[in-house]
Image 1 (cartoon, rainbow, N blue to C red):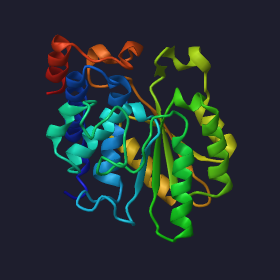
Image 2 (cartoon, rainbow, N blue to C red; image 1 turned 180 degrees about the vertical axis):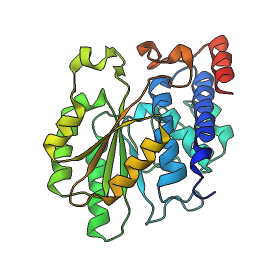
Image 3 (tube, one colour; image 1 turned 135 degrees about the horizontal axis):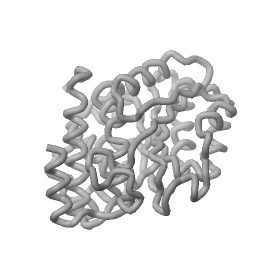
Length: 272
């Protein structure tokens, strides 16, 4: 499967969202809310934007992706499965003891996972290292890093932001999944990172604000990022936690909770 047509992307995103619900339901645990909110972004990255090949997942020239908010693993797993990195039947084994699909991504077990993540705040530092390596070795690949808006309350994120600009990492693009909710409620009630765009601008990033569910805006943002020279890009994507499942949307309670059977069936019905 090569790059899809733009009009095919929403259908893929629905399949990814179904996979998220299937996996979390069968695990009886997991993080559906923040996985659903970033599904459209991952769809564009893996089916339209990134230079990747499921038949050669370790190719040196491939683009890299770091899921810094590693608890959104169900979204990454469903994306990889739908892209052909492993069989979709594996999704129902999320968090089972012998499964490759543990609660957070493991690069040593899962084809297509570029970095083991889970400890919040560390992903951008890792992405910086990848981007620097690409430049030093003249390998030409780009690096994408998805952060949660609650995650950017972590101080290490801003140390890494300073480094990314210092080293002029124009092959680095970060995306902030700005769904405005974290495990304890609204991010501005817990520890406000706003204005997110102005903060990254002040560090020296090229900043692009988008609707994280609008495919035209997502695609254009990634295309613009590729043209930026001399500094990294931060895409601030306004999203809806639980997007696609009405009773999960904008509900902090669905940050880390599995649906029961009735809710599972209702969610699949809505995503059909």
